[in-house]
Image (cartoon, rainbow, N blue to C red; front, side, top):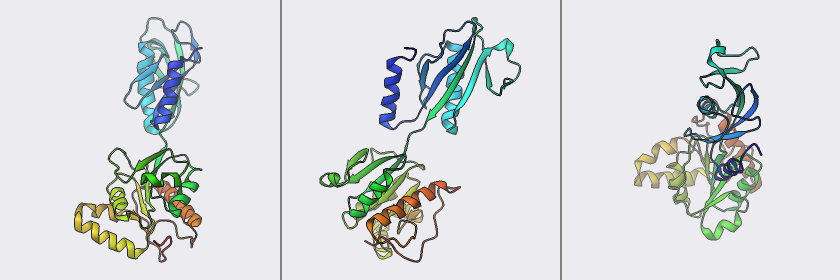
Length: 280
């Protein structure tokens, strides 16, 4: 086996954890090299390289290019050649060149494939609408997390992870992630406070305008620092498609999350619709 079991196990472990990494695969070698075609290595966002794709001259180039691929989210092929043979940054076939000072004088072609962590979709609540949102979201490439009371977890099958309540301290959300409150009367304020204070790029709540106004007044009375979060909150959540049934509202919410991600600026708040949907 060219690729070690240890490297393959690491790939599975990182995928299970929902972490980003880059896979480097040796495609071709020429002349004298220590690498073999088919060998793989894993490079983490911290720059750690696990596996073997060649000596020090090769691994340095692989590490730099892998971090670039992770940042850009694009795969690429690189070629590491003896420095005396490298006079341009790109070879005649368009492959990016990297210089090697190794005395062996070999050439190695390596394919770099970034494996970005799936976006997180946090669903707060276990109401019928929360269940519908989860059901629709299962067709997306997203890491689904449910936050609800432990006794309600069984109502939300199919999530990748569950939180008991709305303490999000152990969960890191960033601009690529989404969080939606669909508690529908069960600890609405706790869930909304948690989502408003999170780093999610999309923050939404399924509710009526009247409920939103009441909750906003209560929470801002307690903490004015939440004001910025309310300014980017999608509420009532969901594109206005005239949704009435929970399944329709779930579809409207997921559609809005997708639309938000496709916007040029993920921080832009959509103009509120004239009609409420998902009132609760």
